[in-house]
Amino acid sequence: MLAAMVLVPILDIFAKLLSEDYSVIQVTWARFLFHALGLILLLSIMGRRWWKLPKKPWQQFWRSMALTFTTLAFFLAIADNPIPTALALLFVSPLVVALIAPIWLGESFDMRRMVAVVIGFIGVLVVLQPNSATFQPSLLWALVAGFGYAIYLMATRKLSNGGESSLSTLLHTAAGGLVVLTPLMIPSWTMPDAQGLAMMAAMGCFAAAGHFLIIKACEYASASQLSPFNYFEIVSATLLSYVLFDFWPDLMVWSGLVIISVSGLYITLREIKERKAKN
Image 1: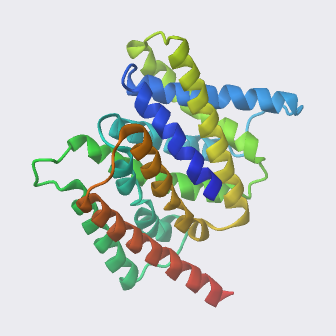
Image 2 (image 1 turned 30 degrees about the vertical axis):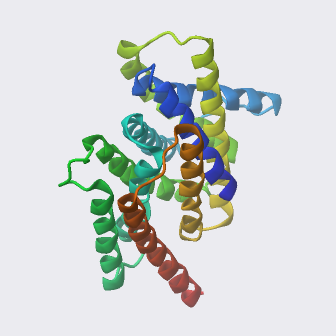
């Protein structure tokens, strides 16, 4: 999971750079296209029948839609905003999981979790600073992405024991994204030059590698056990943003991130403790 949290920010860097010359929806489409092409090549070399339909097609499709929606929303956010700031809002996903899991997964939800969720969303307001002159409405896309990512994580966990290989699951994820994004991308299509094409291919490869590692991690540990490792992504993203864009988050962003992270970690650790008690 730690390795995945190093790779994912790299694809975000490519997406941010590409969004300067191409529409965000084309960048998102390219991310899934090269994700799929790389996996088809790998599965063909391995002698796998990559064209086979998944065992749970609708569950795979909705999981793919969750990641597609999350990716598009997050790319819209980072096109105009620093990646670490957008990531701070993406980290509402554990709070959203705490709200949705009782309905979807039958997990408990008590007053302590409710308080943690409320405090976490106070952290969201600290990052957004909606009443200040520096407020960027486009940052709200990162918050939308946080909701989508929570659904993606829960769907991944439900499918991790479904008999599908990690590579097949990853290919189905990319295929679903391409089906939805292709007709939406055509009106804003711009022919990429050699550099743009290379960056798109690299972005797709990093995306496939990162999410392959996330899926493998979900096979060996629960979503709640893996959640704390997600916060390592902010470390990688901040260092990359500082080196490449000379950006360092201000005090308000760090304060909001700490509030959101502590709330999410509290919920995660409480869930782990309850599961151990049941076992």
